[in-house]
Length: 263
Ligand SMILES: NC(=O)c1ccc[n+]([C@@H]2O[C@H](COP(=O)([O-])OP(=O)(O)OC[C@H]3O[C@@H](n4cnc5c(N)ncnc54)[C@H](O)[C@@H]3O)[C@@H](O)[C@H]2O)c1
Image (cartoon, rainbow, N blue to C red; front, top):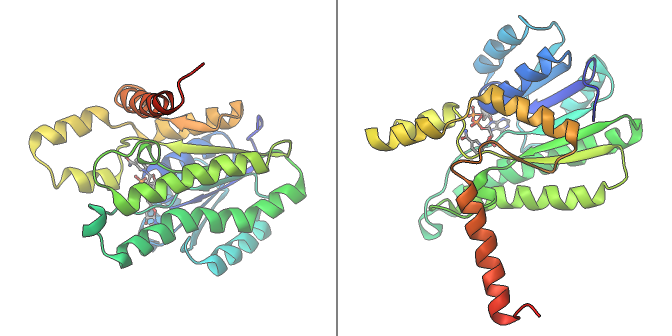
């Protein structure tokens, strides 16, 4: 996708953090911006800030895990702005300790938002995007925890692995169509989720997190660049994550070589 001016973006969980960073960058590029969230106060605050950039802002209280609410939002977007061009399935919740220590209810809640949320967005908006035929793009927010299984992140990490898988299969489904797909895999971005984490750790760890943290608007610009270049994977830093990626790939190749040595 090359032209963004006058096009419309829909960003779930867009009132703070990465979603708001994307909304800000898209608004500056001349896009109509729709942000959804489940928190009215944050939505109102975000709307006020975005309106200093453009009047073409719509905020909606939508629970991404509720498909009928997402369908209603799609009708509201069509009424206000017409066809949708960019869908950012970004809303997500943290959570999860070791597998056995995470109650089933928590597993279900986290997967409802982090995996079913993006699926609800895709099932609702993709048929319309294919039908209007203009250049369009879907960005699913996963995490570096969806690329490499580090720490004890059970329900969160598995939900993010599922989002990477969903995006890869969607890319196959949509080959040769007007709709591109990217999956956003941030490691640490300076957002309220990370502020919560920082409040629970010691000073040394807090400093490490601060050193790693990327600014949400930088992520917004990385997303825009990936849409322009038709890139599937969007990484937000290559300093702290490269070794993890290399280890994962090397472990898999080593396992294959051990069982089936390369001829
Ligand atoms: N911040 C990071 O370092 C980081 C790293 C990797 C991945 N992520 C992912 O990025 C995404 C955005 O997170 P963030 O860090 O900007 O945090 P954030 O808390 O600022 O943003 C998440 C937003 O989603 C909203 N939300 C939660 N449940 C929702 C639901 N059911 N329906 C609609 N909105 C809902 C929240 O109210 C919040 O505004 C998440 O998917 C998160 O997992 C963040």
